[in-house]
Image 1 (cartoon, one colour):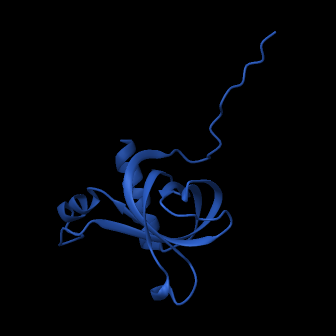
Image 2: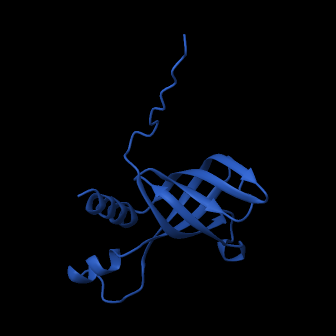
Length: 132
């Protein structure tokens, strides 16, 4: 008798799948001396994200991640909360909880560790707007 395997979502929070521009740098002081790498944020939740990076990022490492929220600056302008066209970014310290490394590139899952209240609110609002 064939054994069926059902994939079940492990995340407690719903994820938003959309390619976001991001950057990542090892969270070691002084941060100004750390090399930042361009990344693509494949999906995001209020608690973490999946990134693709063209370098090796080890599991368990702590990283500072900047993620652009495309189009969110327009919403903030419409609500008079922002007065320029600079893309809205969140910056968050994150831990790499899993990593698939192939050909000196990484696909990683990160959990957000230390997010400012304003970044947390911006991300929650952004994700809520995208779900509706």
